[in-house]
Image (cartoon, rainbow, N blue to C red; front, side, top):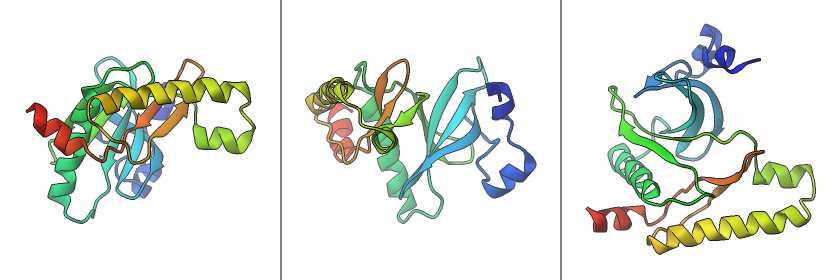
Length: 177
């Protein structure tokens, strides 16, 4: 199935997940990639030029929603302050017209490090991957950002840290405001 076919969610798919087919900013939501305790990540397509993106949103019903939304947007802002070849690029962090916060970032096609390790032993490539991720974490720590649980994505083009889940984003962002 090509990308154009994947971006238009069917009515049946949208019924199961109301995010499918929605547009947040300039990003049309195509499919869910992952879901965690507070948020979900979707593959999306930028409506202006068709570029693929990953869009992270807060799950509905999160406790202290207003505070969680502010922390979430602070995370997007904080990650956007760090530039490193092994960190995904943040395109935008904003609130939709419906009041829903989201972070749009570079999409890496591939599999998570966790899935790769379950599939097979990585051998020597594991050392290169660990060096890349240690370098990325060093770059974030130099900006006074601390990760809770970085999500690492392996892609044919490159490896990258996709989900910073920043513990100390609020303090780092506020100190730069």
